[in-house]
Structure formats: C-alpha cells, structure tokens
Image 1 (spheres, one colour):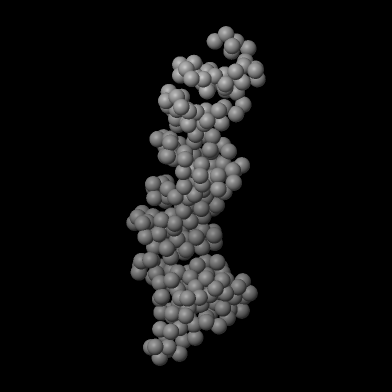
Image 2: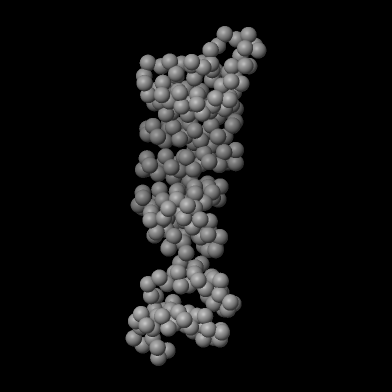
Length: 275
C-alpha cells in the first residue's frame, strides 16, 4: 500500500513486476491495486493474467473482462479491422454472460448509429438467430439505413427464419426505400419457400434495377419456369443499369442458367434463357 500513495510510471512498473512473483498473495494484491489505479493499458495488463500461473489472478482477470469486455469492444468497434471485429465479437459473447442484454440495450438506443452498429455486431458474430425478435422490430425502424441492415440480417437466417421474421420481410417489400425493398427481396429469396416465390414474382419487373435483379436471382435459384423469360427481358432492357444488373445475375448463376436451358430444350421449349 505504501507504494501506491503517489502512483507514477515507476510504481505501475513495480506492480506489474509483482504479478509474476512466485507468491500468489503478493501477485493478487498487485493486480488489485493496478485495477484500482487504472493505468494506461490496463486491459492489456489484465488480459495477460488470463494465462497466469496463479489461479486467483486468472479468476480476477476473467471477472474483470466479464464486466468490461463488451463496452471495450463496443467503444473501439469503429477502430477495429474486419478480422478483429469478428474475433472480438466471438470472444465477448463467449466470456460475458450479460453480453446479450448489453447488446439489446444498444439495439434499442435512441441513436440510429448505435442501432446500426448493434445490427452489425449481431451479423458478424452470427447471432442473428438469438436476436431475431429485436431485428424484426428494427426492420420497421424509422431510420432507413437501420431498416435496410436489419432486413439483411434477417435474410442471413435463411430457412431458419421464423414466421415473425418472414412477416417482417414481407412488410419490408412495401418499404418506400429501394435499398430496404432490395434487401427484403434477397432475404426472402434465401427462405426457399413456395409462398415466398409467389411474393417475389411481381418484382422481376421492378423499376429499380437492384430490386429486380434480386428477384430474378431468387427465381433462378428456385428454378421457377418464368425465370428464363425474366432474365432474358432484363438483359435486353433499354435501360443500361438494368442490363448491367442482368449481366450480374447471369454471371452469378452460370451453372443454373445452363441447367435451365437444358431443361427447356428437353421439354421442347422455345424460350431463350440467355442472351
């Protein structure tokens, strides 16, 4: 205790050295003081004790990270590389029993940027199934970027999407924002259900090229008969953006296009699938 009456770099250095002494009680006191003093780089110091030879130091480090890990990750999210964002998300949700609740509090924030970040964290940690109820609510958010991201997150659940999730996506098909509609079309395309196919058919002639491309892409994946006509019409559309998007669909589904053409020829159809 006498060492820390006037904490400075030397004192912090002495306490850090004490962490590696053979006497567990001394090391424990040193770590407790470091946590109280909160020197620069404390998270790295405590993190190093997760592999300490002293059991009590490992336990203190684990409890410390359970309390601070989520907020550390959240506050530094924008500064992390894509790789560190993914690794950090997996680590935080693993070590912090309260991480889900903390995530939900941010997802319901009054700030659109925080709601948007919460969706991003859920997506990169592959926990959308655990957060589906919140994502359904955010799919109707007042901010169009939040709605768009939430709809995309729901679409990543694919065939695991619940009835409530599918209802949220169908509602998003009527959204005023084209990005939201495009994501909703793509998301429903991942569900692979017959009723979803019927819901998407009207969008194969949408005036928005991205919405249209996602609808045609979905019908091709499902091998719907009308997909051949839809991709042909899109690739010969008078609008350059629609033709470009049509080419994107063709390149993405080359194998499916070949299968669809072969099926048409076997049936004696005169439909030209590709251009």
